[in-house]
Length: 194
Image (tube, one colour):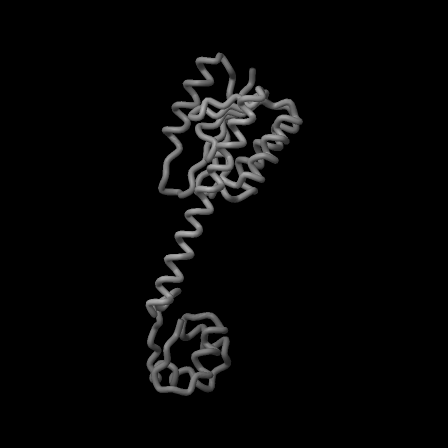
């Protein structure tokens, strides 16, 4: 059998070597030939990912018989996308194996397990979003200013560019034309800039 190994990490600081080592050993034990698809620095919540898109294109050309991934959440955290992806692979005659969960989606029991684990992955992502939103709301309620820190722009610095066009002033100040326009249209001596 021909296998497609898929690995993903969410940030560029993370490494794929651990995933790849286990998957390569598994594929070798099964006696399969493998090609690797690696997404670095890409969230599992995204439906479109460079290596995953390449994998799907290769699946449509019948370049492999099975997709093997380290864990289900490496393939995706959005249940709807995950189910559609696995349905698409199934329709193309491509089997699916998730190493950590021991899932073989070619059986009814494996498909049931897959649905349950996909729902848990989506639940986990939703909980993280809830916690982030709650933290932002708490910070706002405590009067903390969110976003980029304010910067004080001395009037002397602005005086040197008054009378220039907005584009010239922006170039001289080292900011965008929109920022230069906002700064120059403000009347106070020292303004807060974002």
